[in-house]
Image (cartoon, rainbow, N blue to C red; front, side):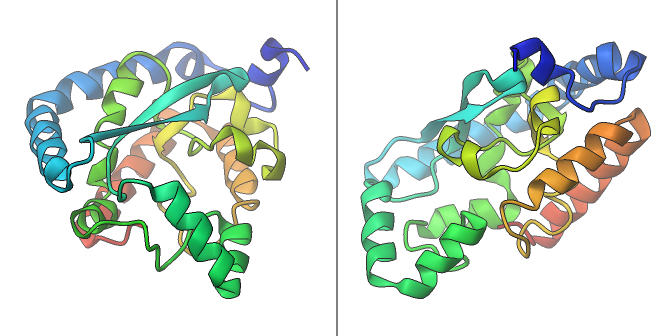
Length: 214
């Protein structure tokens, strides 16, 4: 399937999808940066206390299947990949949890400061840059890594820019398997509208304030 076919897979058409959504993203980026900019700088400096970098960039699958680098404040220890593999090799229950959901409730890689950033979702503030340059949107499917492509059972994801937040993030993100994300993404792609996006943003603010993030 071509990139053009992927970008048109099961997505609602209309002015908002074609033009309004991107305009809203740019407006919200400019609105957020006076507050978010200093916080990003502060958090990145605090993340460097253990000697590692302040930011973490990882390849993610974007619109039409194109890869881009998704930015976060670093919340994991240096050598996190090696620590994860060792932990999963020694813990069968954790291996099963990882295989199903691609995350761990008790993740040995997370630093103390990183745990705070993750429960408040503040580690994702650098993705404002991804939104500004057009790799992502404020609302959309949550971006996944290239190695997760084979276990993602859906096509609607590829039709939209991945989101900083979305229906899965404010719904069952801590209690559902990775594979069920495709259901949320397909439903969102069929219903996407200004009012739906604004509603998800309001619900996201509630999740952040209540610290119910992953």
